[in-house]
Length: 517
Ligand code: F6P
Image (tube, rainbow, N blue to C red; front, side):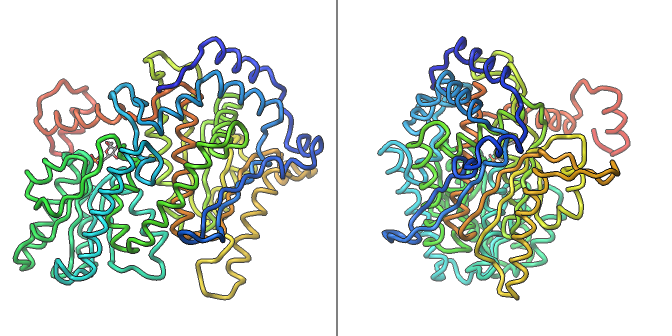
């Protein structure tokens, strides 16, 4: 990871942590009534470039079980794990992805990196901006719709950002299509007019079978519907520009990004092109500015003052010391409905590992299963288990103080009331003579309150979770930037396609039943 971890000091810090008593939330508040102030962080950014006025988000960790002793022990672990050096390596272009011998330069996309990386990223962004503006001005003819084809990191970020930020206005109507199931593409076709549709093919490698198959079908759809030059309606977003050109995309419409930007960390690269097309470059840059504010905080604050690191302390505490296997994220805002999906890939593909960066078995559980949804819907569906089930599940609540709707303010008030009520109820619980009506309480949550759910706040939320994921990886000694676990299934799918493979009896029977092989 580029850090300088000391094995013995790490083991000693974990031994201290394991030896700490588990105080209840009630006891922690009783011992320190100012706990809320001590455990609330605010990250802010200018409301517009150069403005002194700020917007931001506050994060309240007070309803987690982190005691002062635990925080001190986690700070010792941070030091023992070589966090400062690893963070320096991350932003300094060091090899933080040792299994692939790469740096991880997503920070540079928003100005947090070495001067050379930032300069390169700015040049690529300027190029993307020119194409976006040219398209808005009609350089490719009338463009009303865009079908953005990609999968995983080449789709989840754009889908989230477009859903969050185009509720009031979209300069271009974007449909993100990821699944190879043709139904997904057919649904986009039904919503678009081929004459005015642009196809954006987003793939870091430009080899992913789902994306390349969908892209070919989208081109065929244009041709079948009388579009004269379907190839002229394609933009490629990729770290493999040669492959895109080979596939037939004109060089002028290939927007590259550096190989050192990982797929699930790529929203701020040219993978964000469909987002920029929909919201405009000024708003796209506002998203970058929000992300940069988090980077600045993450780079300059130490220990418990550092909010993403503090979030990682919570994650480590619950997975490693309390045996929690999942973490729930509930957005009390329709605009963030896709955030749990986005975070699932970010956290589970990054830190769902069983070996350390040195290839040794890990000495404890790694990433929790991230899951969630929107409030208040979740309250009427799955919160029963959060309140009375046998699993201990830390919950992140995310809400915006400013409403996204123009209806009676009662809507937003009821939404926020419920969000805060859930955190309070999980913590307080309720005694009852009737066991079925009793709530154990002492269930943890963290609350994120955004001033508004705009482009900057979304950028900040995403960067916050990227840095939280990195901090978790450093504390566990694992490499968050590779994903070899996705390869075996892909290889076996190819074997099934060719029929050449040593398949187990169950798979053989299923292949026969499905007419494959
Ligand atoms: O299979 C996993 C994965 O490699 C992800 O890490 C990535 O975001 C996704 O596939 C898409 O890859 P690409 O952008 O190269 O098409």
